[in-house]
Image: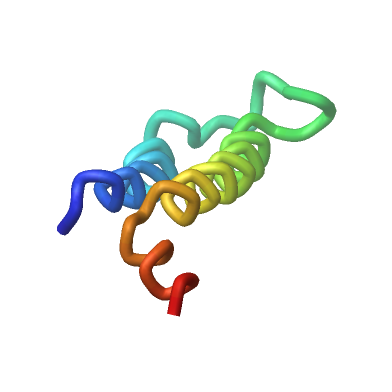
Length: 66
């Protein structure tokens, strides 16, 4: 696996690895229970990470040229 693609492991670890840590109803963050906020935050972070991987992956650039 190429170096930039290792970033795609972070959402997996953040969502699954963070659930035991974030499994709380309180505190409320932005009106949501903490667990829901944790999952919503990781959905947004995952989108950003995928955009970064897409932007800097050399295989994508080769496909766009052809």
